[in-house]
Image (cartoon, rainbow, N blue to C red; front, side):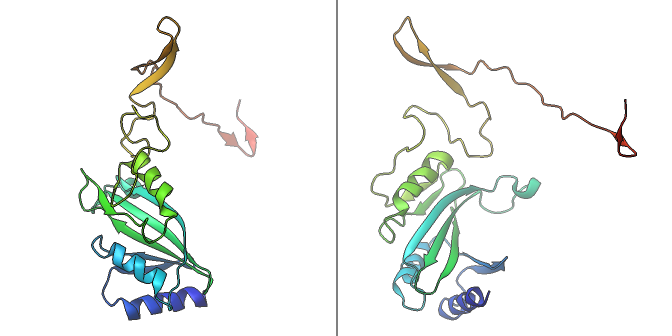
Length: 197
């Protein structure tokens, strides 16, 4: 806990008024404006007071209906998990894409090359574009896939299904043929620690 508080104090002292810091459950989350994102990332890597040598993970976030209520801010965010081996401390760096219809944030591949595949995954799953990425293309879904599966408004069954057509001798796409069904939870009532018949 001392290390995370010391990290928060160093960030507040060095980057006065840039973004917001939160300290929860022994973890530091720093949300920065998108225009400061690459400069802050480079400083976190290069400055000896921080020395975040390693990008552990990068993920897209869809805040549509966050915590079961409508979200008031921008819909899409990117969270980067960083590790300083020198100080043995972690940091979550977060930024929001300003446009919900065309979410774009700067790429961190030039700062941490390990961001490459993570950014491709966030592009594929959430539709977040990373400006300056050297090879931004789908990584998990098929080239002809329509939509972004981890967006909260993407249907659970998807838009199309694919199957092998023996007459055509190839895989074809067709509209989803699964009938939607409503799952009703089974209710078990117990009285006096015994089951009611």
